Image (cartoon, rainbow, N blue to C red; front, side, top):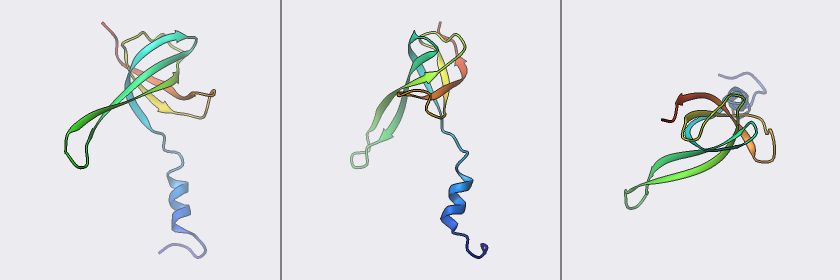
Length: 97
């Protein structure tokens, strides 16, 4: 039972506030200073036909370290750094050959 005057939805919102999304993608461009473009691909099943389709999204991510094109990186949500940059590179999973 929750406390008197406490809304369960408000309590849940406070608990989930600190959770940041973390995704894995491949670097497609590193031509900007301290910014890389990361292609994030995911497979989704069509609700009616059942075919799996690859859906992709490109995001701009902030990085301080040297990241090359083709690297597999993990990006995490952060506060807006600029107009288009709301992700940051957490780690490099695999270097490009």
